[in-house]
Length: 239
Image (cartoon, rainbow, N blue to C red; front, side, top):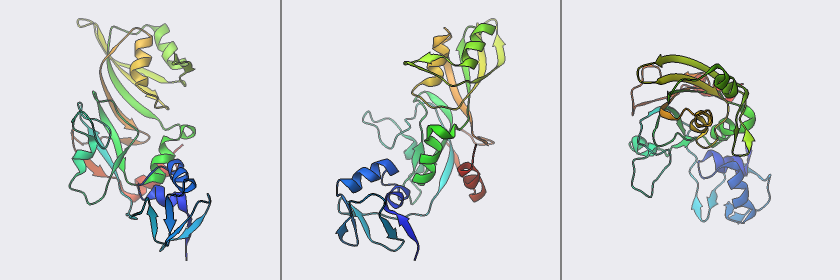
């Protein structure tokens, strides 16, 4: 019989992150085969009956999708303002999906949706430094020194951003704007917008075009496709 750590099973079921699952265990809110389990590191059999707050967890097969998030959509499961969320696009599927990370309400582009808690935790952990490529329309035109500042890292919210890659794709001299590609390996709140704002070039429009090796390919806004097993496996071993 295969044994797995209890917090891993809970996370993979999409109930909570592994860290939150550990908290649930310590708080005595998890039961295995009718008995409370409060010891971290406890292992369970694959056929064990597990409940959280009295509700049995459902062990779903794992699915991960690449989604072309439109602008004007919230990257959460629900929204208290009644705005459309990324989860709304997956209502017809028989399993619950949630986003890996977030894109701002007014930012479009590539977002991964999954019910694989382990994969989500892996990709969002800072040590894995997953490359994310954004294309921004900015006000004004970057100088060589400003490009160097973005490349070296900028002090934001009392911390310095990691080195980034910057490539000017197009300059519109008449409208006094530029299209700039920015590659980062972090995902702090509003990071891309704040980086450009720090060099006095506010973002007018923003899209994420690449996540690790994944691109939107022929997807159109609001559509998605499921990742193959090979793609998921490659994500789990991404540098």
